[in-house]
Length: 83
Image (cartoon, rainbow, N blue to C red; front, side):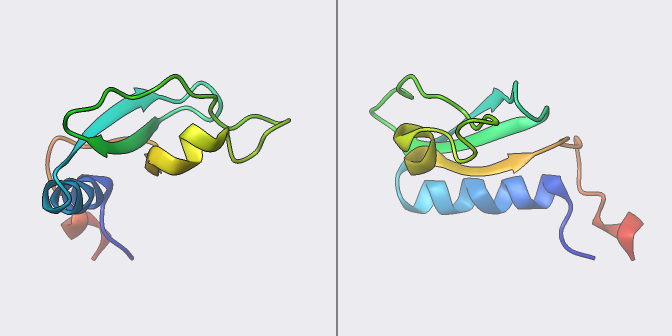
């Protein structure tokens, strides 16, 4: 098994920190869970169109800033449950 979503999010945050970005999480209306965006610290997340049946990858803004999708994010690491 791979990493739990808590650990995946920590890894995403570390990569964002190294690029001087911030992480913004928005609920996904299309598939539930959360879309995870990495954007420069001095910017706001522009309006975007998330994936849909008509546009499976979302719009250009979504594709540029979205770094992941997570169904659920536990409050702590649960990787040990997978072993």
